[in-house]
Image 1 (cartoon, protein in one colour):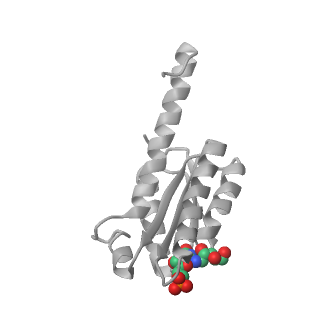
Image 2 (cartoon, protein in one colour):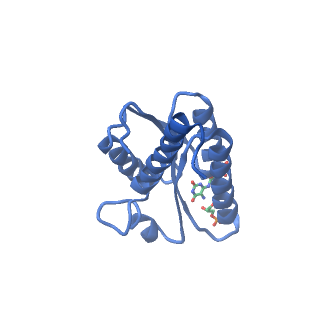
Length: 157
Ligand SMILES: Nc1c(NC[C@H](O)[C@H](O)[C@H](O)CO)[nH]c(=O)[nH]c1=O
Ligand SMILES: CC(=O)[C@@H](O)COP(=O)(O)O
């Protein structure tokens, strides 16, 4: 699905600024490749704040989809588990509650090297781009269901 005439918000946890920026680059490139009209960026301190930022953007009525981006690197304590878990849970809650797709572009890794390998640039993965791809796919499903309902009055099971 193209993203023509579509508006997107990137909500970005800036705890690791260099990693965050690479994730933003990957997500933005993917959305613009598909013709996105708007890609707005909203920064928060870390992953724990991403769900609330996504909620603000989703409820604004301005965006067709949102991509949440950030990186959590495990430390010595259980803090990692809470940050990652609450971020994932919160993001899922926002998209299910609002019907606005929210891509999960959060790196949850044990080492910086693992993170570096997942931010594009020829590494293992471009998690920012993948999260953007995911919301485009969700928007395609949403549009298909809408069209089916318009044609038949019923959405496919
Ligand atoms: N350790 C990491 C954090 N921790 C900060 C929290 O996300 C949050 O901003 C703080 O607890 C204040 O509410 N955040 C990351 O994004 N990545 C980390 O590795
Ligand atoms: C993932 C984190 O919150 C982490 O940076 C915290 O480090 P630590 O568990 O060593 O306090």
